[in-house]
Image 1 (cartoon, rainbow, N blue to C red):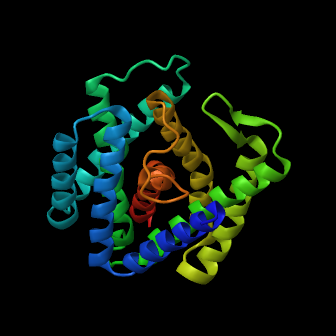
Image 2 (image 1 turned 60 degrees about the horizontal axis):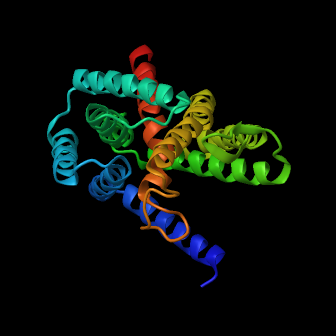
Length: 266
């Protein structure tokens, strides 16, 4: 089968499953539990971490957090830990030496870069105390628009490399193009889909454009250290689940914090 057609069909199937499952609370939690296990498995492959320890840790945390623990203070403590690991990951991104990652750091990244972001993302549709799938679907739409238009603009007029050492194909023009189109799309999402103030979704679009790109680059750094092109092969033409979720697991906790701030000041 033609590679482009394979990639297109795989992408359509992924989007269809994601959106249809996100429409209902139980199916959303079930799907993201499966995605968490797959992502942890791929991350363990990248950093050479033992799956039989990592996957049970992730599953127990997910089940406890999603179904039993509903305490705002714990949510915020998790966010602080995730933020600290995000800063650590950004420092790791800018390291010129591609040194081996210590075992302690591997577990810190597992918890703060993969597991906790998943936990906070599952809070997003429930941020208003009533399940609202439009928040998570809107976020995914912005990420898809940003990624797609960054590729299209970069391919068309991109000349200046964004971070050539880590991701040779990314350009500054593509980055700005993705950011602009995500911002435009955010207006329509806010006004005609989710019915929230435009400024909220403009901020989310900016977070997606900047932090989503950083998340993509960080995952590329992990892959470069591991010496692989993709995090996995589960999605023909796209790579692994981590390749598809690298942006949202980095930007998701910041969107969670934004809604917490908005709820506090409202």
